[in-house]
Length: 289
Image (tube, rainbow, N blue to C red):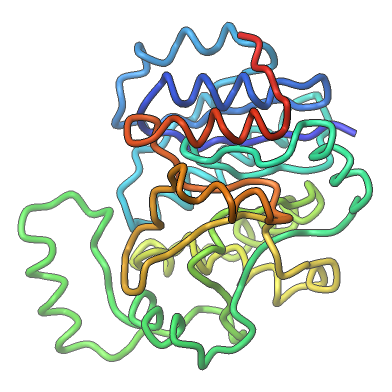
């Protein structure tokens, strides 16, 4: 059973190199999508690492824009087109790091074969959803590169009625829903649905933060729902009302060492590299470049 780790990266080739070396394993292939805004020259040397493949169809990603979801989806499409038949795609960022060794992670996939792991709030009445509704009920021009776009956005939202998702379904999502571990069966279902219903993509292009509700909404309103586990096995800590998860440091080591999560985010080796060294020491992992 082969696993494809899809890593969305936009900076810090040295930190990305460490993550790739840490995930080096015979049954893992490591796919890297590098934001098209970034000069690839600083990252090209990473393609020489074991089982590392760069996504060819790079997308220019804007924070909060649907462009990030498009980058993920097109990367998945590219992975699914390969001759190698993967059982899972595991979505990571370049600032994630494993909390378990590779044998443990691979065994987890084998023992849970067929289950789909993604996080979402059970209730549409949660505090997160109350804030998130504006992400799709209003127009967002994040990916439209024109001068004065936010001024135009404000005027349009003042006069036009609320937008409705093109499918009559219950919405699902959460602040941790971006990162998931999904079977290729599940991913093929999502891509086929999006390809057949162009209204979904047309609507989503004008949303904000779609990565936190796009995939869970499509999964939980399909026959895949029965295989969905409401847990993405990521340790992520948020500060109240922050738009970004906290940077984890050596002060978080005790909590990290107790969790059953497979991965954590987010890390910044320029802020605190000691936490990454400590995690590897606990697991007795030695990275071989």
